[in-house]
Amino acid sequence: MSIAHTLLGLLESGPRHGYDLKRAFDERFGHDRPLHYGQVYSTMSRLLKNGLVEVDGIEAGGGPERKRYAITDAGVTDVQKWLTSPEKPEPYLQSVLYTKVVLALLTHRDATELLDRQRSEHLRLMRELTRRKTGGDLADQLICDHALFHLEADLRWLELTAARLDALASEVRA
Image (cartoon, rainbow, N blue to C red; front, side, top):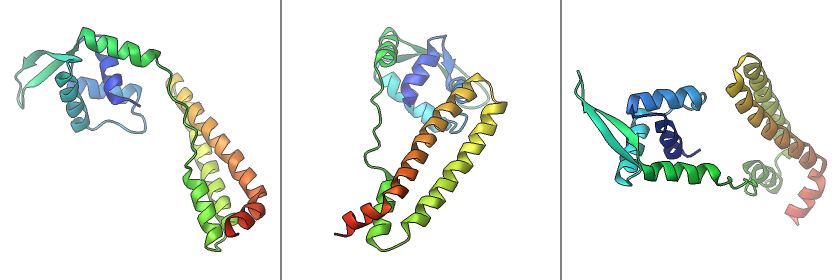
């Protein structure tokens, strides 16, 4: 996820302080990985330097000054370009799971056990996401569905790899 573009998009509804941006981000997108304040402020600093946001006001408070950021026309254009550009599909051609299976075979370890443990972990996470999805709002349901579909694809790969394990062992050990 592009944090910079997400923060810019949040600013399109109106100027906000860094704290407000973090809160809005976490509510909408940070269910599993909330932003750190430092990440918000370093991103806003970079966006300011690049002319995509401007300081709309500075307020003195009990602590440090609070800057209110507003998106610039260049920032709106940048968000528009980002939103209309398709994301590159991730083919996962350098899979950690594949690497572990091949290394297990090369080192004469039990690759079947590795696949079984991985399958169990995938199923555990799928159950957890299904519970979360059942009790969640629409945004949570969509996020969980996305993750579940990816986990289902991984499970299919694990089953296929298990079925081809003897052939793969012969190939990698040759």
